[in-house]
Image 1 (cartoon, rainbow, N blue to C red):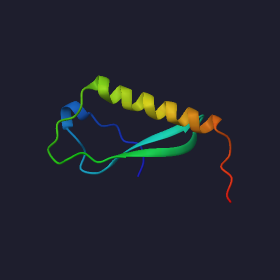
Image 2 (cartoon, helix red, strand yellow):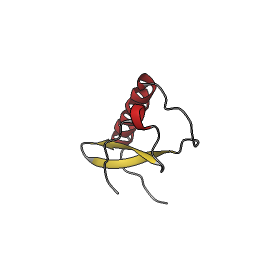
Image 3 (cartoon, rainbow, N blue to C red):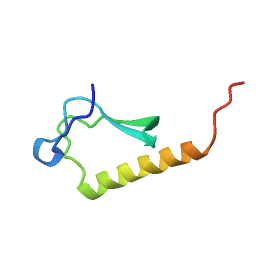
Image 4 (cartoon, one colour):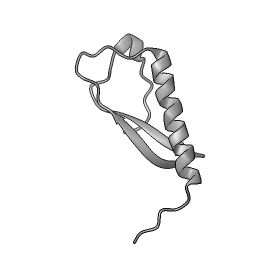
Length: 71
C-alpha cells in the first residue's frame, strides 16, 4: 500500500478504506480511517480540505504534547 492519486469527484469513493495521516515533519503520529457507505456521494471539496486541516492540527498538537510515558 502507498500513496495513490485519486480523483474523488470523477471516480467516486475507492473500494477500500482511506487513510488520512496525522504527521509533522515526515514523522507519523496517527491516522484517521475513512470508510464511506457504499454508493455515498463524495463530500464537497471544502469539507475534504477541512478534514485535512484538522488532521494537520492533530499532528501538530501531538508533536508538541511531548513523549508518552508508560506506567
